[in-house]
Length: 108
Length: 118
Image (cartoon, rainbow over all chains, first blue to last red; front, side, top):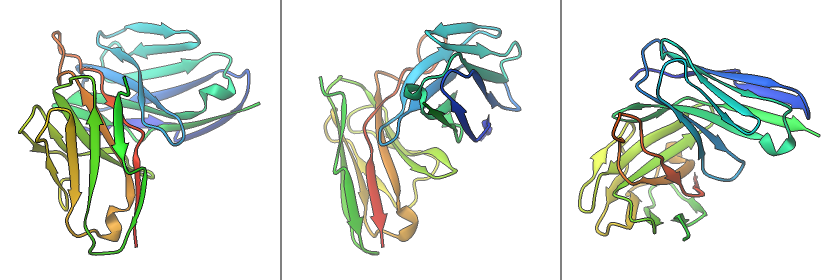
């Protein structure tokens, strides 16, 4: 099993700040998904990236897939308390393999 | 549509007891999955099913059994619960495993079942 490393593990910021979280692997991904999990709920898919160098935007969230397809990042602009949650990346390896996640807390 | 529902939401068991977790989906999805989520471990796949009447082992299948007698339901059984099975269990479903072009299909998750084994 090829591991997915997510960093940072925890992040606590003030409302309005920008942040970036990362997802890395030593091997190439065929595709990568980002999920957000709010406290007490199941994960919800945010985006799927497939092509090396791909950039996708979802309102204030920007997702980037590395050129070599071994890494991905999620950038949030002007974070809001509603962005609080666990951000998980997952790669397809027969079935989905999830990273351990970045736990984000955005304080008002 | 309710999406993916899980029953029960919370359960406390004593070591050695048995129980069944029920997952139901109303999206006519072929694929269904059971995961467990533990602090610092992320989501790990227990068992999955690619269609009615089929099941397969995931990453951490030991101590669990599953059945998919109906397309819309996927049951996870613990025959003899152990404290190591204390976890949050998530069920998910997807239309299929991999899309044309190779990217993974979207998985839709239920709200989870919190299980405490004493």
